[in-house]
Amino acid sequence: MRHMAQIRNIVVLTGAGISAESGLRTFRAADGLWEDHRVEDVATPEAFRRDPDLVQRFYDERRENILAARPNPAHEALARLDREWSGDLLIVTQNIDDLHERAGASRVLHMHGEGLSAWCTACDARQRWTGILRDEPPCPACGARALRPDIVWFGEMPYRMDDIFAALSRADLFVSIGTSGAVYPAAGFVQEAKSHGARALELNLERSQGSQWFDETRLGPASDLVPRWVEEVLGGAS
Ligand code: BV8
Image 1: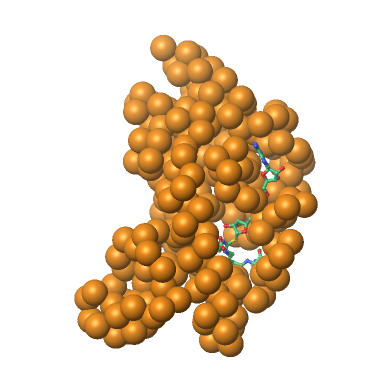
Image 2 (image 1 turned 90 degrees about the vertical axis):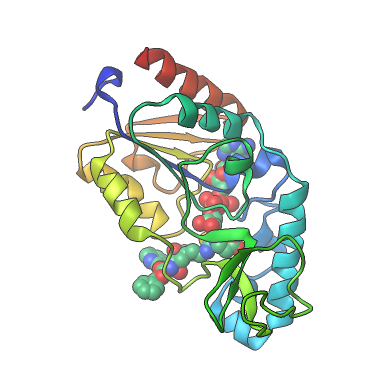
């Protein structure tokens, strides 16, 4: 097991829990998104073919909530780590919000897509989008009315899996923050990192479905746990 001094390459996986204290609903909590929307009705390609207006409305509302949200101390602490960590760091997020970037982090990878991005299924262009899509606006690049949310839906392949697995294979430390470990392939990353000898740390409000794979689990709100962990890492590093 590698100790602090030997930690050079870090992979951080974040989920909805890191943005909960910014007012963005998580998925599986009592008041979670999946409480009043069945996944199959709003987050699958079949749902989009069946009822595009329902799906577009779901993501138009999420886009408004993202624009109204602000980064919290957990996002800010990871942005500080990104600025000050001289080793490798990759923040792999399952979240479609841009709070990591708005906090100042740049080494961020959105494996499930971005709420503030529209994807044209006619010309394949992707562009920043802060407005609505339910009125089927024309694609700014090709004019086709074929824009969909730039989101990875269930049954679709997550983005940049090669980059993620390359980073996991080099990681000395894998840290999971605010995720229930219910959705694959993200839920399998801890085992992948461990198979390459990484140390695994979980920071979450409650134990996740994959807790047994972690060397250490710290329970509590991300806005408290993450700044203290980053202080430890940077403190340990100097
Ligand atoms: C694919 C975008 C194949 C949309 C999302 C293996 C086994 C079983 C099933 C599967 C399998 N492999 C694949 C599957 C199917 C499926 C899957 O995993 N299903 C689950 C439900 C069993 N996976 C897929 O379909 C994936 N695609 O496999 O493609 C393929 C292969 C080849 C070629 C083509 C295709 C794609 C999955 C991605 C779907 N899109 N998001 C949107 O956002 O609307 S997933 C979405 O749900 C999120 O991105 C995230 O990944 C997941 C939600 O999980 P969390 O983020 O963890 O949120 P949750 O609410 O669950 O938990 C929050 C946690 O935070 C809790 O633990 C809570 O305690 C904690 N918390 C709360 N507050 C705080 C806190 N922690 C700290 N501080 C706080 N304040």
